[in-house]
Length: 255
Image 1 (cartoon, helix red, strand yellow):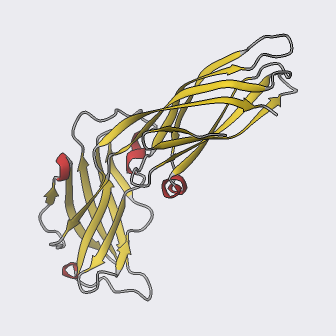
Image 2 (image 1 turned 120 degrees about the horizontal axis):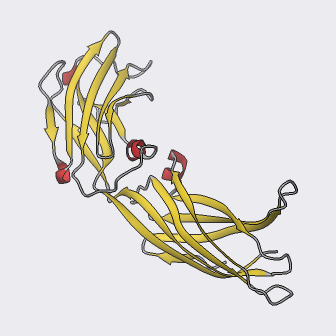
């Protein structure tokens, strides 16, 4: 099956299948599409805003149609690394004598950053003053660095400028799902200590967040020692955009 291309995206029909639900009597057609993109793009939400399928004429000469949409999906680290996402949906199927989907087209909406930003906080001190950076108009503030027993806690505050997508409540945390934070040794930059996997969200909206990250020594690695021995490196989305991607296919066989 020939892929469909639009800008940095490639869409491929991976497979189709017709299904019969014996309890309800519904006859459905299931479609699997694989969406892939260039590695520099880091999307975290996507949906099929609309699709329209026209089936080839069946034995009686009838060409059935199906239209609809597929709701938002959150991308996981697996898709984030693979640069591809497989999405599937069910739609009304034609008569079994219809040999193919004559035409399938639709529009995919993707939300993600134009690029990932990396900020470095150099002058680390316990209970020191807040440090603020504003790369590309995004305010990223190290509000505090504290020690609590064996743990260090860094509180980061993010404020994105207006004009980006507005997320529904169930989507709002998706724009931080791929953030990365770690301590980097000043003496040996190859030594990096990532934050513990569970962070605390102190404040969260579609465009602002305050997050507490915690660090702990790992056996066999450099000891935490003094904050002056480390830099704090934070990777977070740049300007967040919504991208429309068209896809179209012809003569997709049903068997």
